[in-house]
Amino acid sequence: MKWNQKHALPHEGVYARIKPSNIHGVGVFAICDIPKDTSLFSEDDSELIWTTKSALKLDAMPQEFRQLYDQFCLIKDKGKTYGCPRNFNLMTIAWYVNHSKTPNLGVDKAYAFYALRDIQKGEELTADYQSYNEFANAECI
Image (cartoon, rainbow, N blue to C red):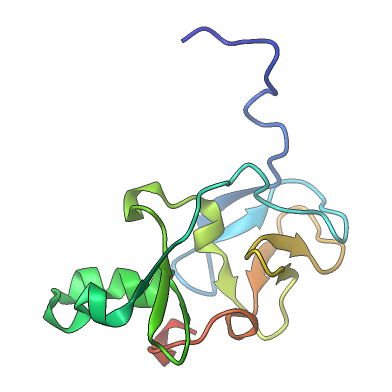
């Protein structure tokens, strides 16, 4: 496919990238200064798929697959409902934001991330998972 000048360049609107994290495995890091209230990952328009825990049959699933649900899905309704990516192979970098009790990102009602304060280039982006997600597995925090 030939590049179309009508579209933004692939780096436009990009504020972060994945790198090794001291918090947990990999994390998301600012590649430029990010002003307070900036919406991050605005091009990530992937819709969450909501399903029930019973429909997933997690107890019958191999542990490696169940961990995907426990670690990456949004869990609500006292652990009965899971918000999942359409396919785990399609997760964008937003899914790799690590947890912090002193986060620099907030999450709105549509689960979109925004900067709670000015963020410096090189800083790891974090969110308080408990502000928007119930956890069936406390190990994820």
